[in-house]
Image 1 (cartoon, rainbow, N blue to C red):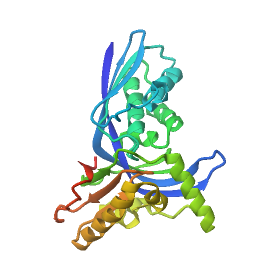
Image 2 (cartoon, helix red, strand yellow):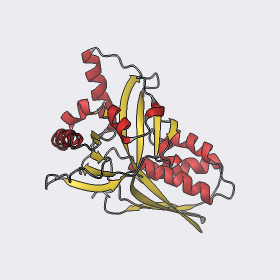
Image 3 (cartoon, one colour):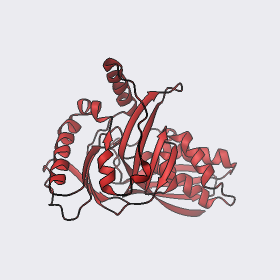
Image 4 (cartoon, rainbow, N blue to C red):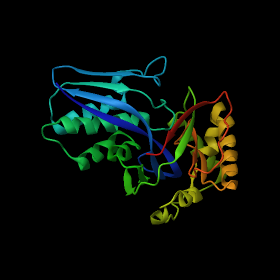
Length: 294
């Protein structure tokens, strides 16, 4: 058997604007993806008759991840085998460091890493364009995470991408919870809120080329899910207002601070892009992960 190891990086959303529901039933979005240094480790061994997947690590839920056939990494391997017509067995091992179901794209990152690993092992690789196509079929975050890019502007279902140059690395503190937020329920709650308000979503005009500094990013940072998820999750209802206040205080100190929900949550984060800013004190009962942009 031959082996390939990939890092599966988490992501946060620095901008997430929800558009109208499409005919397919999915909502369109506009988003600014940012990769984090935090990552799972995905090891793929190809060859032999069997196909297996095992997950372990500090971020594994006590009751596991459910039926293996529903795991996004497994689905990525099956899709790759089908598309490439590569009749091989595989052994996939995932060391879970990214909190599960928290809006950080951990499952999508694992799927993207499996696609990259299998293409590296395949004697006749399919190449990046085909991997992006397969990523689009698997989920909204997968195409960005397939690219390995530090940043990208995404639209459509997040599968249409404009890759952006990396910005200087800055620290990010994640506030994580044992229970996440169901993405479908969050979209439904947002659609209901929008309908009751009589609001019509329209694409916004963003000067993407100007997002070449953390100061410019901070000016447009925001997440539409915050309007509904705060009421859906007790932890978010406590953490999010506090992080908003911390970001405001950071800006008063001259720092470029962003405090937001990531994806549909429940993970919230504080990004401070100024090393001269004063240390931030977090409540002792919060579960924190300290990382940086990557």
